[in-house]
Length: 183
Image (cartoon, rainbow, N blue to C red; front, side):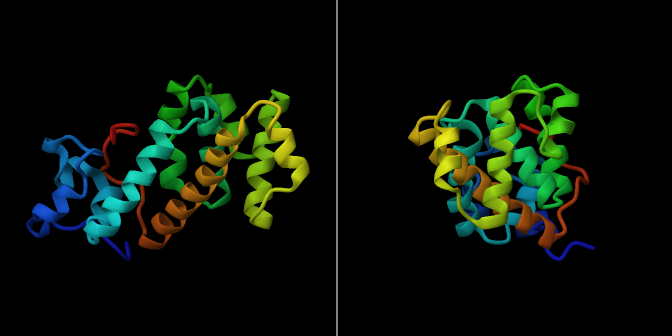
């Protein structure tokens, strides 16, 4: 049972719908269009609006190349045991060029590319130690500039936070929007 089920349609007001401006098309600013995860967040419109701005940046405007971003998100989702994030990002990862085999490998921290292995190990380091060593920071710097490394850290943290919230609220796959439709 969900600790925080989707906000019922009759409780969506103008403030709730306004929280989704820029994230969802006007016709999707409702419980059915928003899907399970976003409809649960609708209980707190001010928090939702603030957090979704950050979330939209991480997913669509970050300086991380989409392939690397999705590797990071898949690893975080696996480590945080977040089925919603893990499954929701499969089609997004495929759009970013990952194969199903690469998606499965990333979840368990494996990759055929040396830099991608370094990236996944850096996710683990952040998750385990809440910081990166200078050695790891520099290793990431072989392919990522400072802004990209900052976006990497915030992607790990942001998706870790979402996993924590989704797992606590009891957000499962349910009847949700198609992954990637939050644009």
